[in-house]
Length: 267
Image (cartoon, rainbow, N blue to C red; front, side):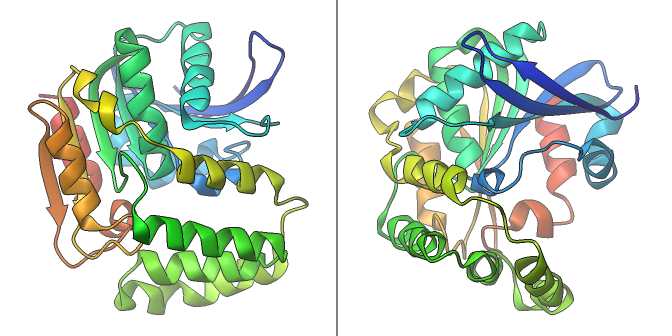
């Protein structure tokens, strides 16, 4: 099955971009982080299929953006409801779910409110409720968004997400993207960022009943490693894997991340 770029019309008329790649028998649904606020997955199927080719070898992979025009405000729970509607429209159920950062917040509510869609769950570098570090970082990004400082947001995100060795190879790229790739609007990013600050699934996390793996990073400068440990402790029988010495971008920087994801979902 080749890489495919798709557009769904939701029951209320809203539009949602998604992509599909891979040829495995099992279905894997990936939900990306708050960077989706600047650019949806539209047109990225080929790039994703190359970046996540290990997962594409074992799964048929779907990656969903948030709806194009987000209402204000829009909670992570409402975003999960949109995702559930999109999955049902495509005939998807009992899937492997991988939520990264804000995508992990959305995935929590997907598993809580729509358990028939979740066979297994991985929550990567995310939290069940915002902590002081998360509030400070996102608050800073919102201030930059208000000032139209796209370059500042990208560079601050990169500096907080990756090791110095990784940054030496990619810092120039982020600078170029921030200089020449400014979005037409910051509104969608702002709505998504504000939903992170309002996210609080803490009391309902014990309702997640499917096998769950929480992946964190000890040096996470956006949600903190402690948030991953707390999250795993709130979900019955959840497993925890911590990447020592890495930060929020562990899902990109750790060479074994895709192998670890596949191994858990294929058990």
